Length: 181
Image 1 (cartoon, rainbow, N blue to C red):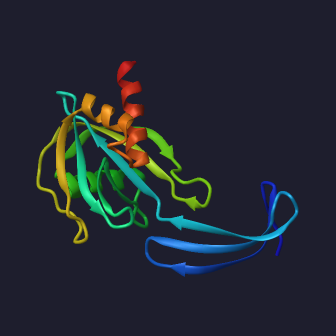
Image 2 (spheres, helix red, strand yellow):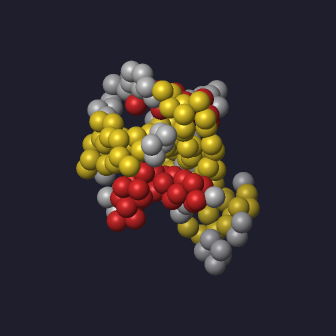
């Protein structure tokens, strides 16, 4: 087996760990400087992040303890895309589950690859507008507090580091640029 990937050559590959959300793969490679080596790749379930923005320019963010980073974070609505589900359907489902909100207007703001060095984890970004309220139904592992803040405050938090979730920062900054047009 020899597969070229850019300036790298893969000579072998094996999955060393797998669960429903991630796959950890170890590749035997020939590096761009022609050395034999190994390279670890983490493949995460594709995801979506949604920034709900109401007519008064408030956004609805989630506040939740996240196990991996060991802290409470403030983020846009985010979650994985289920098998057979479209990106937009996943965004609609996550918005409803986490906040109880539904939206009549959806704007795709492209996608981000939050960890390009060793993680394959595309995250598709959406701005949700023309909102209606309803009842949330978070997953059993989620203890989510929804916070409503002025969009201007969310921009400050994205810039000063109070919001550290990269997809949320990208969503806020992309939305700010979109609203200026």
